[in-house]
Image (cartoon, rainbow, N blue to C red):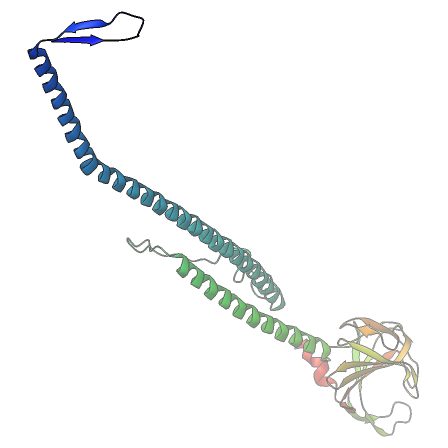
Length: 310
């Protein structure tokens, strides 16, 4: 069998001589090739394509899940940071409250004249105990927040109680400083007591409504308590006089002074010098006539003078 191939009209054709065997072989190879391609195409279309499509869907789903987990992780990180910031602020507030409580405790220690070794707020409290195996337990964030809230509540309660105690101590201290006690002179001696006596000028019986302390001329006269000067001047029979109001109904009087050293309205403290001893008014020699008034009535100053000495 001859096969003629024409490439171009102007060129000579190409001739092939093909026998029957070659044609049969070529036809068989072509059929086999077509069958192989058909089988491969059928397998590829029915076997590989669904798996590839499924794999792409799973990959996309995994990517979406990963994105959700990353978003959840970022949210969790922000929440944890928020809790840490809140705990840090709470810890700072508790440290400030602790500092105030310690300062208040130190003031109370000083006001109460307590032993510094027993109440020392500058060092940690002495605590301890044996190390028991397995006694340590972890604590969660919620437990920690609850403990911090409990600690804050205890500190608030303790601060309130200590503040009330401080106020009571201060008021008691003020009351004690404003309550007359002690002698109105730094040096001298008791020359006349309270009560009935013979008048030093007439010799007739009379009542002495104060206590006399004799001493040197111009010796210091001091206030027996904190108070406010309500009189500084002359009174008939008393000479130069200083009257001091101490509150709670108490008023003290210092008479026969050589000179007064304070003015009306002036605040004075316990032991502060207010006058100089003299002989003004009805006085035979340098001394201070000391009176105590309670709710507008003169009382015996003896117990007040003895109070500080005892």
